[in-house]
Length: 298
Image (cartoon, rainbow, N blue to C red; front, side, top):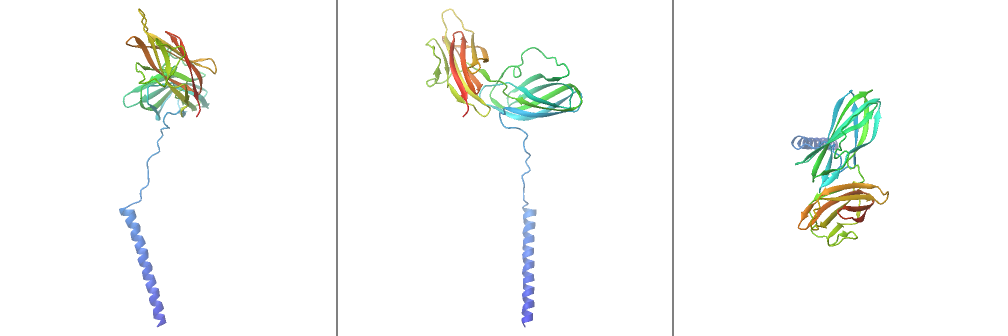
């Protein structure tokens, strides 16, 4: 009798095990066939962070001449009118004994495109003639309208020998300071703005602040408003501004800009973009006024 009970218990345990295994197997089939497990397969974007201070590039050169494109490698956000200057720095050459390298930067937004030629980036054991005219965006800052821009870089080369690689960095703001003309707009309220010493009811130079903290790109920003009363028989066609470093004494930026007339006043609105340091903003013409500003770290 005890033997029969023992056999029955074994058979019951075996039957329960079969049911458990069958249940687990059924659940597995249900989950994987009718409700399969999903995993993310989204590719990692090759676009670097917005407004990079520089972009690192490796250019493989396997022919005596050719073209290579780095498409949409960065995004540059321009909230207001801005100024950009592109320049190649820290070039490193591997194996190549001769090379003439040029490039082009292309900025594309939904409604605006800029193309900036960069002739003669590198010339190793060869000549590289270029036009003598100043190229905005390469030789001098280029004013950019607001927008979200995708940045593409194209390189072309010739007379390459002993094929190899070029590693370099592209600076997006290769300047210490820049003055951008914002046109005939004017501030809604200058109650809390700072006014240059010597300003009168007939002329004035004002800034929205005299100190700013450098942002992630390493620059501070100041808005400037200048106006001059029109004297009898005299028309003012141009204002001249200079921005000088108080640390070195060197002039970092110059702007000769036509001005708009509003009633009996000529006026202009500017944007100053500057790296960390102390500066003197000077209105040189048609009157002379100055005010000191400073950019510092947080």
